[in-house]
Amino acid sequence: MISKMKKILLAGKIEDREKVLTILRSTELVHVDAAVPEKIKIPEALNSEYEDCAQALSILAQLKVEDDNDLLETPGTPTRLVEETLNHNKAIGELKNKLNIVNRELDEVEKWGNLGLKNLEYLKQNGINYAFLKGPSKFIEEIESECIETVTLADKTEVIGCFSRKPIKFSEKFTQLAVPKREFAQVSDEKQVLNKSIEDNVHALHCLKQRYSDIEAHFNKLGNKRTFKEVETGVFCEDKLFVLTGWCPQNKTQQLLDSFEESGISVGINFYDPGYNDIPPTKLENGSYAASLQPLLKFMGMTPSYYEPDTSFLFLSSLILFASFILADFGYGLLMLIPLLVFYKKLLAKGFDAKLLKLLIFITAGTTVYGIVTNSFFGYRPFNFGYDPAADDMLLWQKLCFFIGAIHLTIAHVMKMLRNSKDASLLGEAGWLVFLWAMYGLICQLVTGGDLGVFKFSDKLSLFGYEQVLYVWMFELSAILILFFTKPSLNIVDSLIAGLGSIASNASGMFSDILSYIRLWAVGLAGGKVASAFNSIGGIVASIPVIGVVIQIIIFVAGHLLNIALSCISVLAHAVRLNLLEFSSHLGLEWAGREYDPFKEKN
Image (cartoon, rainbow, N blue to C red; front, side, top):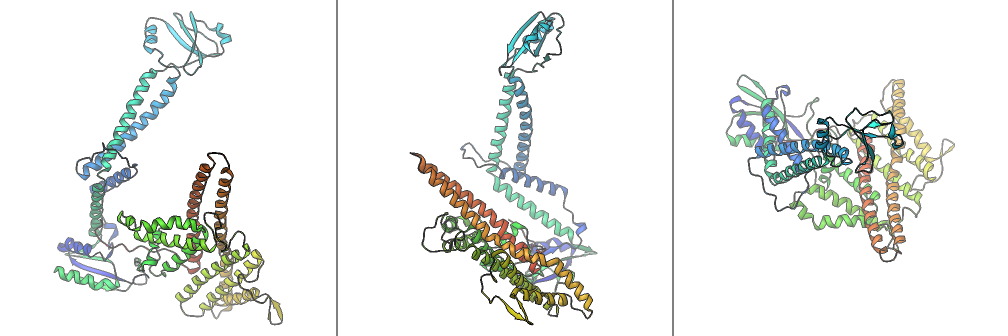
């Protein structure tokens, strides 16, 4: 349920502004809207410190946990810790860049080994020219040099070394190789020094991570300061008064008034119902079951508008059903459900979101029940009962998916009709409801070759002397309702144009939307086939002497874990999609709301 909101207008003395905002923050009731957004100003130093702290936390959070007794907590204030974190991270980046350059140089000098560059330089200073050439040895006689030797490099490449007091001349058949500027040992030593420096800086970061909670607490304080400044500078000020606007839950207005009355600070507060152009924030107030969906909505960045219906209960119920079809194995369900139940309290103590844990429990419990019904346990069929979607009348399972889709979308249309104004246009919406079930019958006829899905009606009905299939009659009825009542008007032409436009834009979508529910059967069936395939492969290798059983276990564990991971991704890709796209579009739910975020001090 979406909580009813009251628009708040609060006025007070400018001299009391900071005290008023402190009290307002302590109540944690008011979602503040800036009265003058363009005047919001946060001190640059505070912004910079906040961003640096956020970056430091991001750096430390990415470090892998190390069990090292040498890790000691780095002393210092949180500000100093942030500075050190950024400095060490910057140093690591610079050192890695240098290391990349050194590695490229090392690749070049490695084949030369320790060439003796000092000796070559000595020869040059004493008038001896030298050159290292690469080319066909059969033409070596064409090289003009006093001394010619074939040299084999470390990578077994043969080059021709030439030494002469006179200028060395050679034909185009030869290429002169550039002599390294440094010895291999020198470059190798620098690489070791760079690696050691990187290790030292990484170790320093791990020591800094021991103070992560202190940096995080400092970050929250900075965030609270920024929020306070945003609210403080966003109020409207004139003469000696300031005015603040925002939103307060309707059932909390008296609590807000009481808080200011107890403080003894004189303020004026008025509450108003949302106006036509107002966009109140959305606060969802649901029971434990429906509230468990909120982590998923937050992850998806989806918030219903204040004026839209709260579909949390329906969304969650259908999500559990759809996820069960997709995961489709009570072995998989138990594998996830049992740890969630056993370690539930421990996970809560470690800071896991209780709503998220409940959501996972509901989904895995539904999967377990569905897996028992379909008699599927890690791809095996251990019992003598159950329905196998891969063998037992696949057409029936397809019809069932279409039927579920039709029911799901019917609920959306009924909710839409209840929301709409009670006038003749409801008949147009009713026409789409009839059209939906007519399309359901057509899909069942085209895809499964059956009558109206899982239900059996008489094949034909008499209508005005003509023999017509039931869903054809439904199409005709729906067309009449849509054409004349989409936008009912005394001008029949206008009504027909509006109806034709509605049919042109929505009819084909209705077909594809119902048809898309077959993915529940198809994806679940694919997961079952993958599970069976891994079981079969494991059975084949089990006959290998000595290690066969070990390989079978490895294939079984790795294969089913991979299948579970793919199935969980499919839940997000398909089960969530059917709610956010198909269902929401038929309901007219745009998820265009903004979340209720009361002004408060965050820890």
